[in-house]
Length: 277
Ligand code: DGL
Image 1 (cartoon, protein in one colour):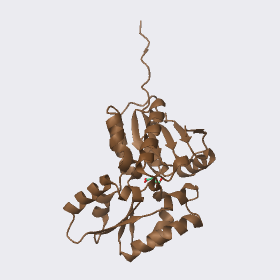
Image 2 (tube, rainbow, N blue to C red; image 1 turned 135 degrees about the horizontal axis):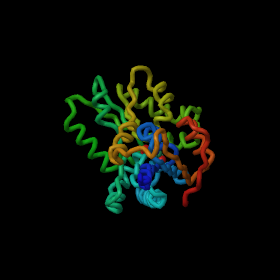
Image 3 (spheres, rainbow, N blue to C red; image 1 turned 180 degrees about the vertical axis):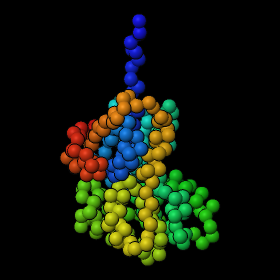
Image 4 (cartoon, protein in one colour; image 1 turned 135 degrees about the vertical axis):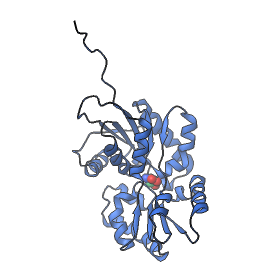
């Protein structure tokens, strides 16, 4: 007599992702493409955005609240889909959760150096990211190994993430927020620009237009997704063609996140639940 197979189907990997708001959806999109088998839980802290214009204590406290929430929702890997929160809070979160895999995101200086034809690189990011010791170390390391003559211009972009948070990244308000930063970058003659905030890829069109032709834009969302995928490891699919779920949480306006994710990921609008404020 044949014994029935009573083993449980393998559980899909469960990845918790957070950002100060809508920007991390650029990383979420790359994660879904890299790991269609994974259950993704996304927490947008839009009620507390922009992190880049808040003090470090606030960003750290919110990063801890969001991490606890994602763990309570069953996350086995955490992706900090926010350059600012990675710069400010990743080390503290790793110390506090030594058994949790944590993948952060930081401005893609190395890929920019590799892509730049003339070694003239601009970095668009929040003031909090550019002023952090973590970013300064990254920059020092890069400059130590860069060819002589490499020039890096750091462009803090106050107002830009907040404009994108309204949920319409191609709006006149976003174009107006891009304009002064693009003008400063043009004045420095950059040939390659790092999008060092996860909100900015959504404004890549207006940014590219304002920078003018021939300037390369560097976004690290796909590299972050590949790293998260490696950390989670290969799993046999629960059944052929099964796709992972997507749970959405926000401390801001649920409809704004629902619409933004639907547009960014090409999905029907999903329900959004409220995060603890
Ligand atoms: N998306 C965030 C980042 O990558 C921060 C934007 C903000 O809230 O200021 O830095």
